[in-house]
Length: 274
Image 1: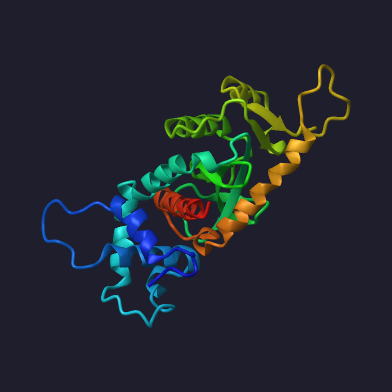
Image 2: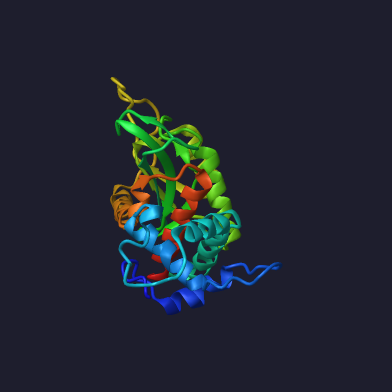
């Protein structure tokens, strides 16, 4: 069965994903085909169904195993870093097709229906949320992601160390970001964050935040390119793509690792279409 909802075929799964699936070194060989497990995981990511309702929408296909087995393999492969390795490799392969001259940084909140790691009450959302920082290229393709943070923090909480780690990971994948513009909204306007960008030879293109200032700020105005800043809204297109993966809309996962790996898998699917 092809994953029609995610627009990824069985052949693509066999060619791209299957080589990253670890094989058992000891014990009996599994009688279940890994391709079928991957198809079920992608189906769960796309439809957002609960684990125990996984096979309701695909009753016409007799897999011969239960949803508990799919859940077991997803948790196991997440701990082994399979989905992150998959995303890292495809990002390095597709780096020449990305628009690295203009980067866009923004955060997104996801409502959480269960208590767990990285979950806090967010007044604006009127509920418990998880916040994650996503870096995209000039086309809105996600190229890096930060840590899972609870939603009760302000916009600048741990943004500098997260941004530093994201740039380090990009460099390890041979993605050159020097001399690029970084578009970000008012929430990222701080001296420490601008300094962090300049240290890495990245030009911060951040709209100034007045912060209830009553008088005009003295001194030299900060560099700001309005034309480049208008292109920041490709982030909204990226978030719209991520919202099409219904599992990422509302968080039911209790661990950060499980929630983060759903994003890696979604990023990989988006990169396959570049």
